[in-house]
Length: 218
Image (cartoon, rainbow, N blue to C red; front, side):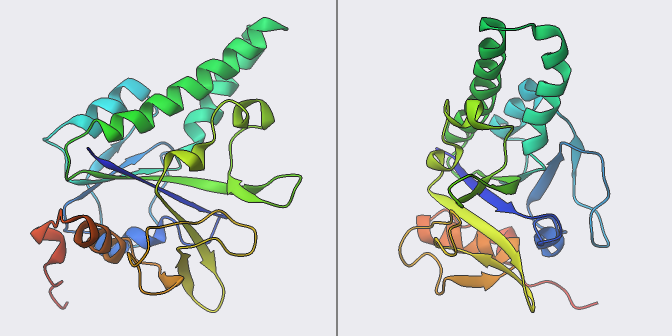
């Protein structure tokens, strides 16, 4: 069974930045949007917004043990923008939302069906609902009512930027964040996905020696 991890945050909060120490490690990135990384260097992977291809990569033993799906929320947005003008009204609209929810749900299920040492990080923007709760951004209540995205994850990290870039590991300031007890030493941790990956693997006993190697000094 693979492990899905949700990462949410505002634009500029360090979601993509957290990957910079993953260069040269056992990581790959599926970019839903074709935009450059906010750091030097390259990570293997591809640009893709096709659910079938993404699910194939998630389950493939040929891919690295840690996979990041960056800007995953745009899978929903792109599918909505492609379909809403031709959907019509009434039941057809609800069918579109059902399809949006079903496709994203099945992608998360693909992670659970992946090799047991696979971790997949689903990176999304955050949004605030009418009750002031901060949650992953989708396209509105009709979709949120069909599937509670954060409920599908045991680990939800929120990227924040104050005096420095951080990940929040437990609920704070009305935002959904969570992780098993003792997985992380503090509520706020460094914005470093490699450190997060090693902590998750150590907790569940699925270490990846390649990701624990010390980086060579430049």
